[in-house]
Image (cartoon, rainbow, N blue to C red):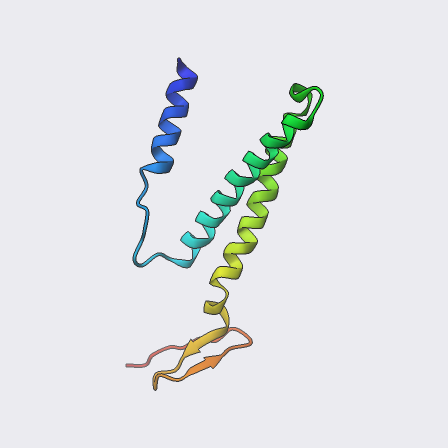
Length: 108
């Protein structure tokens, strides 16, 4: 019974979150992609248990799949927000590429 309550509360927390955010931060995008990657990786790891002779001996495949999915999701999230890292808009409205760190301090 306790496991069912924990599982139900986890499902409610994961699916009760807002579906869309109009002004999401870049780290929120990376976090969401990482969580989706970990979930998909855990599902793939669990699916590989069907091909094992003794699935109970290979339960670590679920954690391995989740960790690989987390790393892939993190990489995809960084790729997804990467245009923010190398482009900037000048005060005149012109877009420029930045190949290093750039700090703009307004003096007004």
